[in-house]
Image (cartoon, rainbow, N blue to C red; front, side):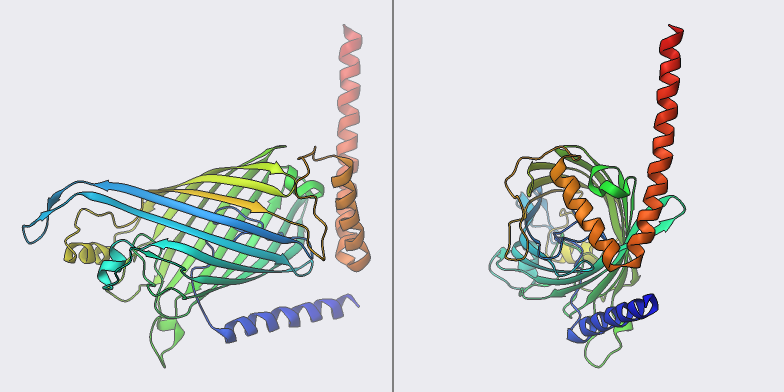
Length: 393
């Protein structure tokens, strides 16, 4: 019976992946994801079935440029270069192991991207659209360590007129695809969101920009990665993440942002209500590779003083989870203690359904019972030691 269940899951997984590949291949989808995750790093944990998550994203970079002399010797006036992005994402828990996501970029600064493309407006409204399918919530125990793993398929549809935007990560004129392996370690398996957790993302990105009737493996390709740690408290989650990219195959010339890079992002999430939170973080560029092509494009436009990539960015988001026809959420209830009766009952109900529906749930509970017994034994020993110390006094 168990073999049949896993066989069905494997067929379902392959069907979803093949369907995504057949529908088209847009790119660079990890950003502005929404759902369970940080500014870039995504978690393999999913929203509950029937749960809807709505997230408003924004990020910005600004730099003052002093006046100078251009390549042809003419005076170049000073000014300000900025890169602002605004987006909204919707994530829906379809089942215990499948979540759908959609992001629409509502606003994108263009700067010299508009100048290069003979485009009059300095912003793009709207910009690109993203479609995602996350498969996760798969438990994995290695010794006494508890993990969850998942897979994230991401599509970026180029709905904006300008696709290769200055100061943004490279994106080609084709439709590309990204797939990411997600893994998380939890210090407390029974209360995943109330103890230290570590998260890992490893992905492959194909921009599919090699042209018509050409192999997708001749297109620009990247290896993307991310690592994060989250320390939650009652009202705040403190996180530190790093993410970056290495080009496996360089993009064609005459494009912006053809460099490898790595960011580090300290962030804090404030839980205003049970189903509403706000996150603020700062992206700091740890390093970037050389990109002579971007510098050449800036020089050709008499902008030699412009940066090739932002040195920092402010990130912010507001997330809300309203009730739906399929899921009741106490959205505006006050944040309660993690061990409160309501949360404990909800998590026990989830564990009970897992045990009933899946043999893996039984194995998980067995592991947790052993952990609880060990913790109880340790607590009893500490209590005995305390009694002896009190008696000695």
